[in-house]
Amino acid sequence: MTTSSEWPRVELAQVPSLERAREIADLVYKSCRLKDLETEEAFAVMYGLGRFNVKLTKLEAVNGGFEALLFPGYDNDKFMILADSYVSGNSNEERYMRIAHEIGHSFFYDRKSKIKLLKQSIITKNIEEEKFCDEFASQLLKLIQRR
Ligand SMILES: [Zn+2]
Image 1 (cartoon, rainbow, N blue to C red):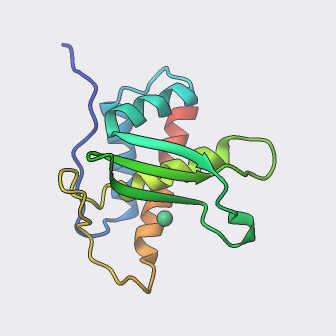
Image 2 (image 1 turned 90 degrees about the vertical axis):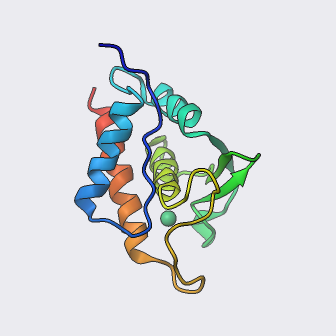
């Protein structure tokens, strides 16, 4: 049986459970066929299939700036992810976590229209959504790095 790798169709209008966050990470891992790939390769595959354009830049997270940002509708059908290039220590771990966290946010958009399905207040950050994205990111990293 041959299956092609593809970005899973997940569009969330509500913040699901943390268990579901881990399931979606499993789904991405399997659908994109990330098994046996190095971390860098695995992320490159996800950027391609998920149509993410990722740029590292100075966001000054240490000085209270953002760690990373997601922009939908970039270049028509892509998501742009900006991630702070600065990481404490020497590992890429933090950088990958930030990027995976932003990928988590992409599931709250209608992929076609790039309109956010999850309605939320502009002023109050959705803490549940943040928790979901953290859980998704740590599970995804765990899967990719257990090889
Ligand atoms: Zn976030």
